Structures are given as structure tokens and as C-alpha cells.
Image (cartoon, rainbow, N blue to C red; front, side):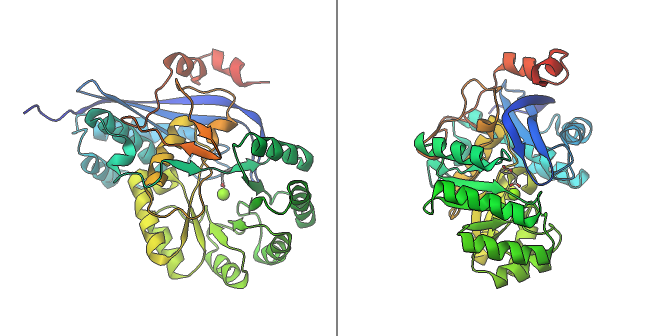
Length: 384
Ligand code: MUC
Ligand code: MG
């Protein structure tokens, strides 16, 4: 019998891609997205790819693209070189024993290991996770240009193109009355039949949230995401108890332990699960299992990953037994260009799950070369 393949090298590359338009969130406005791309080479000649992203450097969370790359290069990779590439649980346990936190770095490497293992066994990544229970995933679109009229036009053309029919609005950066007027204008423009959700990205205090959610409920908004600070679980619980409209935890729920703690307090009706906040695909499944056990709805969240990260997320959300609230895995569509050979397939309001071995996404090495930050041409490519 052949000896098990080992991990030979792990490379991480920062890639800056321009967005198709400004993307305005409560804490930052994005003009570009940075991907941390991982290439993991094994002794049997197989290379797996992984990815992690965040939003706005350190504006969204406490791990930046640069810190993710630093954690991988300096701490995670040296622990894994020479380890059995097929015993992914052993490899990740070894990392966790010596690396606290850093869920994004762990997730990117776990994705690359699963891609490699899928390629090796001839199985799609979802099959390694127990198998998909759906072959395509509903994907909403975030209207975040900052301009209500432009948002309405954008939504109408996406409905017409059968790409998205549910829309999330980013609010929280303006005075409450302005934000409510913005949501009302979009509701008027799209009519009552289109499901609208809002994401406050932690921007409100509890009293503002009480007024804001009451107004949004009256407008017919279908879901309220992370209205208050991530650590203010008690406020989240009081808001969930007070209002009929479902309240979704996002920044407040990273992993299975958060999922358990929030469920124990009945603090949220829905969880937005994100692969890198959870620490990878298996940790996402573990958080989803807790949500299921607690009767909490699951929503496939994004940190605006590119094609590799979004498809990795698609494999895991396809494998979740329940997914009551669909997904927002539209990250690749927000990017002007890509670094993969074939971009993900979005049609009929859904993202199609690749059914080929591994993730089913192949890096375009020329494009990677062009957009990698450590090339001097990069600064020219993304400015302006
Ligand atoms: C977030 O907080 O949900 C997801 C979609 C989007 O536009 O921003 C992200 C982050
Ligand atoms: Mg959110």
C-alpha cells in the first residue's frame, strides 16, 4: 500500500479585486475586496485551494487579510508541513492545539485540505461532508449603493434577469428616520411581494433598535439582521422576544459554542453562519447542528468571499439538513473580475453546486499573478 500523501507546501497570496460599484455597509464602504488565497501542495502531486476574506480590513472583525496571511505563513503552515494530508481532522487538531482563534486562517487551510482530498478521492467536497441535500442554493442580493433610486433599478433588473428575487438592505450609518425613509422608498419601488431584509451591522443601541424594528415591521421587512452590538446578547434576546419579525444573529454567532449560548438565551430566531467566522466547513456544520437542535433557522452568510470561498460555502450549506432562510453567497458577483477559470453559475435565483471532484473551482494562474498584491502592476489595476 502506498504511504499516505503528506502536505509539502502551503502558500498564501493576497489578491485585491475591484468591486462593480461602491458597497456601503454601516462600518465601511468597499471599493475593492481582498482575497487571501491558499495553495496547498501535497506529495502525491495534488494541489488544494482555499480562501478567506473579511470586509474593510479591520472594520468588520478582528482579523484582517494581512493578519490571516501572517497567521498562515508564520504559524499554521509550519505545523502542517510533513503531516498526513488525508487525516484532515488530525491536521486541524494539531493547528488548534497551538493556534488560538484565527478562525479565518484555519478555515482557508481546511478548505484547501478538503479540496485536495476531494480531488484525490474523485468526490465533490459536499460528498466529504456527508452529501448535498440540495443541488442549488437560493441567493439574495444586497442593495448597498447608498442611493435608493439606483437600488430599485438594480433590483428590478436582477429580478428581470432571474438572478435574485430577495434583497437585503444595509442600514445603520444614517440617522434612523433617514434609514427608514430609504427602506420605505425601496419597498415602494419594488412592491409588497418582494422579500426585503435589513442588516444593521450592530449600529443601533437598544432604544434605537426598538423604534427602528417597529418601523421596519410596519413596512413589511421580513428579517432584521444584527441590530445591536455583537456582544449585547441580552438586548438581542429582548428584541427577539418583543417583535414578531424574525431577528437574525450575524456578528454575534461565530461557532457552535456561540450558537449554543445564544440558543440557551433564546436570543435570536435565525443564525447567519459564515464559514470563516466558524473556522471552516466542518465547524459550520457543527454550528448548524446546534441551530437545528435548538429550532433556530439557518441562513448561509457571506463575508463577500470570492469564487473559491463562496463555492466552499455552497458545499457546506448544500449539506445542511435545514436551510430555512437560503443564502447570500453572491460575493463573486460583486467583483469586476475573477481569478478562477470558470466563474460560479448563478441562474434562476440560485447558485448551482459544482458536482465535480474537489471544490469544482480552478485558479486562473495568470489572473492570480496579475491581481496579487505583491506585484507592482496591482496598484495600477485597482485604483481609480
Ligand atoms: C454581513 O454583515 O452580512 C453580507 C452581505 C453583505 O453585503 O455584507 C455581508 C456582511
Ligand atoms: Mg450581516
